[in-house]
Image (tube, rainbow, N blue to C red; front, side, top):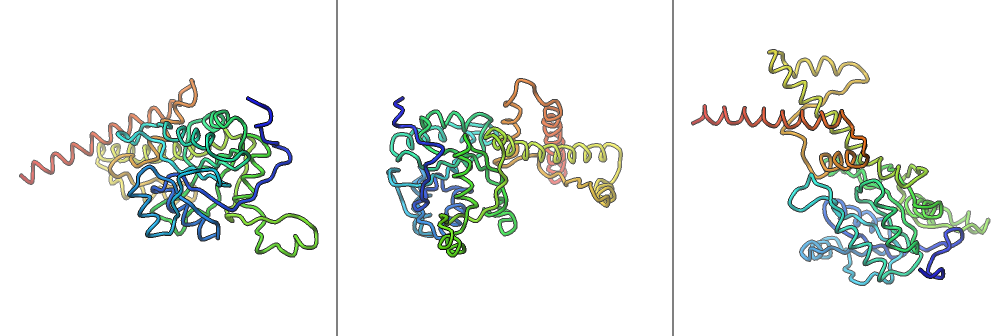
Length: 311
């Protein structure tokens, strides 16, 4: 690698004009719409042409194939296998990083919003040959409560190096050029338009990576305990609903309501990411997985019994 290709991570600053959202699915489309609302020049990229056409026609997200002129890359690609949403896979993510390395201009900002295993962001930095500012800012967007838990809620951010982190924070939560023009005029300080998202910075990118998968692993435990308690109540002829309501009157207790098992695109997959992030496995999470399996079998048995009665 030639030294001339490596960006100056102590002095170089970039402008934020053209933003590309890579992956326009459940997460990427709301991100692209929010970035557009903040007044940026927004483009989209998705391998699914129907998804791309819909984003373009319905939301004005412009199509882009070549990455040369982009200032900020927001990566919102799913990190699960197509045939099994509970199994982590980052092949598509790495393919996009290689495309950025080949086509994009040195020194731009690459932000990984997808959930990734520990160590992934640093591997991307190596693929990019240290020529870009790379951060991980895992999303906390929740589709069912978008008004409360939307794109603009506080989230964690970590950078591969200090300059990467500073650049990422400046883009997500920087000085707003429309609100701070007087400050710029009188002091000579540069002001920048930002996404206006409050960010909680951490010292390493690995902590940012872990923060997301630990959040969902914690949620997995909460649901698994509710499942375990539900089966306990049924085995002992106790009203789960009444017991739950009684216990939840305590200020620091919130037992959840179990439903059809722990599913969705994130929680099972991210829990597996956490378990696979270390040679020392979490015994409590492994036990929680077993509880969820038992609960699913229990629910399936109830459904079968109901079907027999109906027939």
